[in-house]
Image (cartoon, rainbow, N blue to C red; front, side, top):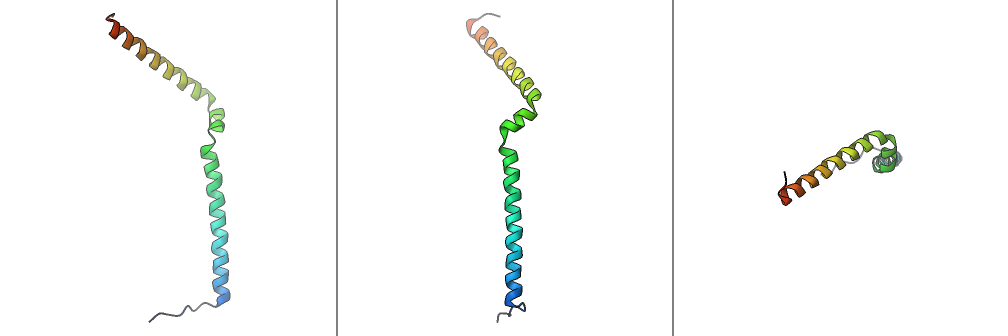
Length: 77
């Protein structure tokens, strides 16, 4: 019913070792990519100007929203 594997035991061992090496390479590659992604401090350092501009805009929008809400609640326009 089943077909016998035409490879010798040594060929099978070699195939397993090749697969282990490829897997180790893939795991190391994934680790380095994850380290780059999760390095938020490094990303912030590299993009400092954009982060500061974004923070300033967010502060302006939030501050304006709070001021507008307070003026609506107090009845002033």
